[in-house]
Length: 211
Image 1 (cartoon, rainbow, N blue to C red):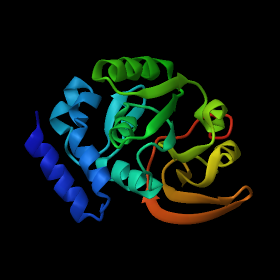
Image 2: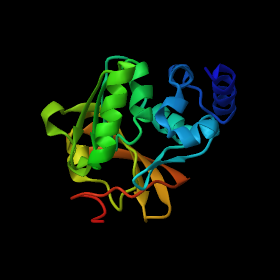
Image 3: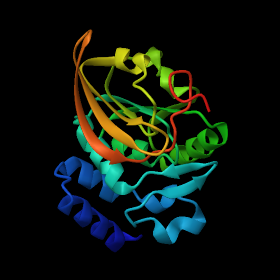
């Protein structure tokens, strides 16, 4: 279903600079229309963020592709997602062969998406809670992806990265953020790259925005 629309979207992503074949293949195989509200289905394959209710959005496909490509993961790697939301980003990572752990702050969204994962047979370990403090039980992670914009980089997330692992997180004010790609080079050392001009919903929690 919507195969032509998915092909067109992947072609646009490839032209825009997404070179990772595994990312493009996963984004073709994950049916985005299953992750949006019924009223939004006709817009599912447009390169835009869409509302999913409760003040949250499903990220723009370009943003999902860029962040996933920046993680530079291999099949079998462990990845922690902060902000499960619609479940689309987690589904892309799972299709790429990652071991996906995901945290969602809003209980209604958590329940809705957990049911969707079960329905689609996606192996994503999810929990309801404060994503800004990570999920220490399964650390360290080869990659951590944060799908909401925070004022700073939460120290617990840096701590839970494996050596050589990458944390991809938007940091800035509530309107505009810079995407920071942080590579853990040793226990206390990090290399930071930046990509400007992103806009995410606020990262709320103990080590994020307070409300």
